[in-house]
Image 1: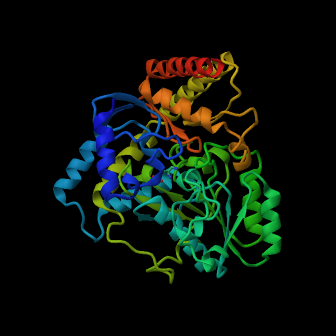
Image 2: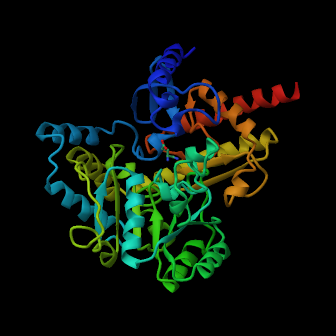
Image 3: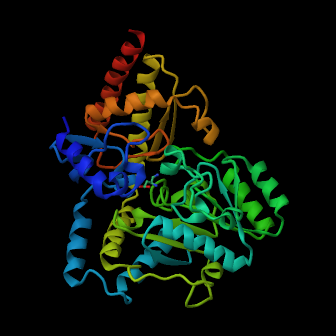
Length: 433
Ligand code: HOZ
């Protein structure tokens, strides 16, 4: 079974570290070998062996309207005919900036980059340049890409591979990254008092997605806003996962808190390699060539990526029904899964924010990394593989969010719930026997 995937993985391991170009897809935390894909349409993935899966990864977020969304494909084709890159300004970059400004609270200016990692690295440089201070506060289990400053108590692949504090990050860099506990304002206050006048920025995933989906507690984001104001620090929302997903205006709109800077990743390019950072004019005006903080890239604002992203965001802007439909679909899945686990007497805590959802096999409410880490990892492994075998593609780690697309049908959602039931029957039977 899955012979070709297996063969490709064996071949890949000879020439690519671990056989993958990003560790989060390596199946390290669930075991087995990753599935190699051939194509996808809507919410259906097809692997190289011709097997189909219902997709709950959505390329880690951007496929909010499904894979190979026709208008996006058309826009990319048209753009490609005119050139794949100019390394010089084009009008679509302005249209994109205007559109983001309309959709998102607090974004006066925006700079396109090529990934979420680059966006977050640039945002903290800007915050440091703006405030003249060096230290940043991040949260344990949050992940802001693989920039050196962020690989301290990091989430996502760094967490599942057991290297949240990566070798290769110098002591000098590490000493400027302070870590607080997600959803715990006191831990932030403590750091701000201890390092008075030294903190340039607080960076946070407003809804954590890289230790599984964890919503902010009521007042947490507002509290961060107030602390940043009181300590002249820049508040950065990493909306690589939540941007244009948990609401048209992302978490800022959903929770009514406006950050000074916001970062975006893949969704702003409809899955093409794009990121962006933007925010308050006063802060953004320190960016080169207006200000002294250098930041650059030949491929930034690439015409293919801009055409794809502009088309996707326009559809989301013009049809807010997508958000209502996604919310309803996620609620349907949540209820169905809760019933399944309850009927099998399996303790579970399912977190959902809009179309982001995570299943933690624990009887504790999951509000931070410590509680996320109480999930039964062996059970998740068995669940993941049982679902995969039955054609349901989930993120290959208990510490990742699932991302729903609005192409998911009621039948596909019900099929997912049915499969979960079958897997749990099998898992509990083998436990009992
Ligand atoms: N950061 C993404 C979700 N945790 C995964 C992307 C990756 O690292 O490959």
